[in-house]
Image (tube, rainbow, N blue to C red; front, side, top):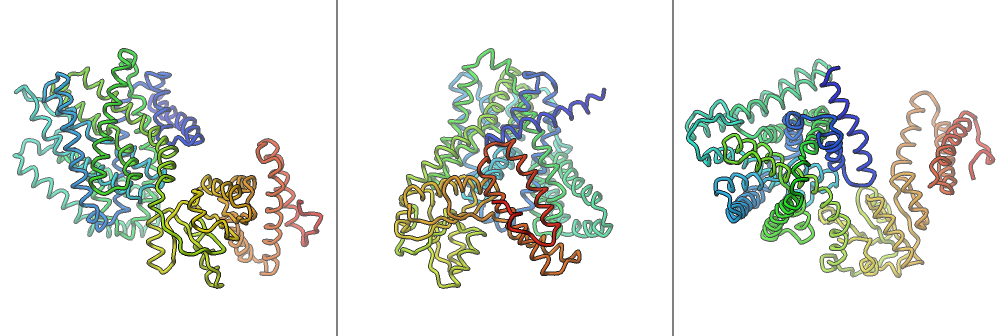
Length: 603
């Protein structure tokens, strides 16, 4: 049997089984991948035992992730974040490295060993943090931008760290570094010139040559060739950066930023995204596989203490710097918790320091396990932050919200795309509304366009009272989060019984939850637009407009009535499935007829 194919099968099967379970319990995909790695690794079921080799390959997922992030950025945004990148990121690396160096010396280790370990431990996991921020839609918040800035500086800092570590070696024998480049024998100033020239070449090629190359490939209309070129570009940049001793992730990020304004940006994103997701999953699985539970069994309290000290120390430094750079308390807690773990580059640096005999093999293995455990613990820490700290902290900050000078008959909670259409329609009729939106960036955008919105979380009772809910006639709940919308409906029904509540439903399950909460009217967000397109499709296929409109109305009436009827047994999945199958057949029969009798419609 081909061992490689067997390993691939084990990886994919583990991911397909464990990750959906983690997502079902809202633990996130990262924790699911880590768990899958632990289960199939040498300290779990022992199905695969070469975590180190797999991790070396899987690190390419981090490279592609940073390339895609670079594609989404604008050089102007990087310039705007320069203070966070250089100031906050630089201080974090310096202060954390110094803290861990002093701690190592205090524990009796040499300053060389302490400094090498301290610099490695100052780095956080780019792959983990950015994945979590993207999954929770926090990338464009102050917390997300600050976290990204620090992570970007850390990737840059790997370069000088790789230069400093060999200088700490206490021996004079020549040892070939694990990550030596072909310019390693050159003087330091000349190495810097070569690196600058290579990065400049990547920028020039990205701005001028790549456009013509992509255009020629696009003319072939062969999608797989375009995908091959996209992957070849990322692989080529990675190899080039490795040749000159630069972090491959940093080089890929620079290439992504250069191509951010290219007309082929979206095609590149579409082609590379699936490969990035798979390789990142492979990376996290390999981290889980590499966790040496034999060391944990030998000294569990020592390991737990080391992980707690690592994460607590980094969180304190990050929190202090976040306050210094103006983060509000809520975002500052999230920023400190998100970056409190060790990073994937620490594995490389520990191995590098071990090869140079700066770190003993036992210490390198122990620190590797500490970092891997901290990575595994971070999703749980962020879960606690989101469910406990964030919600309670927001409810304890009434001074951050707007004051209300008016009391209008209608309150709209949530003013995204769905809420804006309702608000604009009502305003066109001269109907005044009070808009509540808890995203400050959205509020600023609305006010630029002359729309008066109030910053506030509608799940807070005191805010609803201030907005005039006790005297209002109608509450329109259009927030994007289904759980939050149900919570708002329950609170409003309990505290303001005179309010009629209209709500946006994400899907059938959400509609059922709103129905149970007592909502007066709900509307599934994409139902009407999807049905309108379906109507247009059958008109294109030859049906006249009147018949197409009639069929669409029949479908709408039947589907909405069937949904309401299904609420009686929505929590009984077998019965619900049988009911759905029956309704599909009945709807097909009705739509094949020319007319629909009232008796054909579900009650």
